[in-house]
Length: 96
Image (cartoon, rainbow, N blue to C red; front, side, top):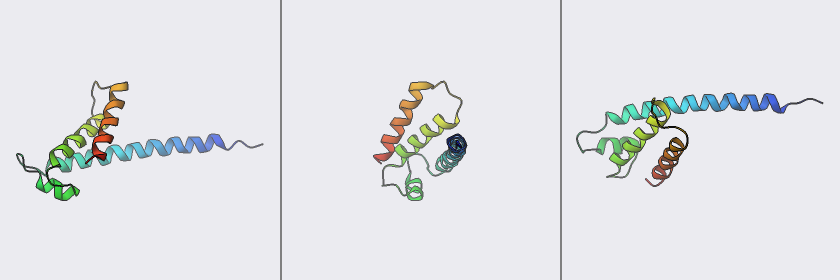
């Protein structure tokens, strides 16, 4: 009898770690790009570049910054609070 589940689960764990690393880098880059696409209260360039509806740029950039903080910053947000912020990001972004 050969056990094949362990190597498969190990591969899946490695894939999850790689996807998380890729996600963190992607969010960091998007946040950096978005930070350079607005002036004062004018978010029209950001809205055009990200394909957003007019008037939603400020909220979108705020959400992107929140996600970047959760994934990439050394903060004191831990455990349930971090999970709650991820849930909030997901639900608010879905409502854009």
